Length: 348
Ligand code: G3P
Ligand code: MG
Image (cartoon, rainbow, N blue to C red):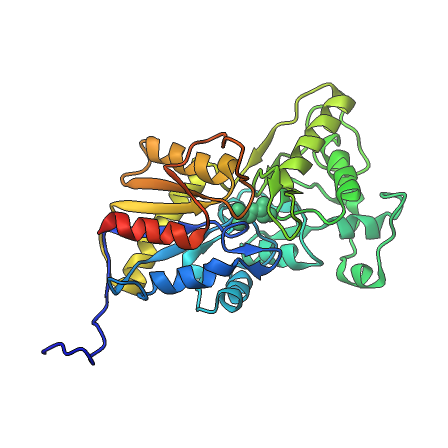
């Protein structure tokens, strides 16, 4: 029909580009939205001068809850509906390991949450540090389980249990105790607690959901992350055994994580926007050069990506003005709103 000034402008969704967002330091800091984040989301949803909508997904190294629960939190914080179909966290790709191992130790996060996440992924037999401390309270000389922790922990005889792999799902809340238990397993014979391997052959394999040394939380300076726990474990393991710890990290900057994101974005664009072709450009907005910018650039340069992954670094998180980022983004902007506006303008 005839468009009159009083008729709202018909909005369309672009099929030629998309956005992917890091969360901590870009959209959220210390559990609160970064001021420009809410506006940035509105712009993507059509409140821009062209009236165009842009599809987007979220790709965080964080975790500790089910994807469903994280999306509920994020929807509340950003004042819009976010679906698990557009969300990947550090441990999401670990679901592909559920068939490989039977009994696994899951470390990190609050209370029982990570055990539930792992079980939701299909892991059959999930042990937590609490279960081990409940079975043998001499495991950690300086910590006793609280009543709540004792209640959550499951009774089991670890003398008869072989733990096949260790998964660090989320940031540890008790570094010292968790490290003690991890070292006990790494130096055990085949993952049987209470035993010691003769030549210090490494016990079960260990996987981390990401490798961020530092991250951006409420404090003015960055905080130690899971990568710091990993470095510290490597150092302890080396001092004790004289050997190098063999471990694997998921999350950004791993190329597999970006491949996972490509598949998710493709599915999301198809299911919610009816778009059946890959985008020409994916704008990735992140605050950590070592994870976000490195991953985006390396994925873009690899043969694995068939579109242009365009890295945008913001100044609201880990990266601080005055330093040179270790990995160079295509552009650096002040915040996520500037990042969104930059991408949209570049496409017009
Ligand atoms: O623990 C989370 C943190 O290391 C990174 O989260 O959203 O910045 O990838 P994000
Ligand atoms: Mg971040």
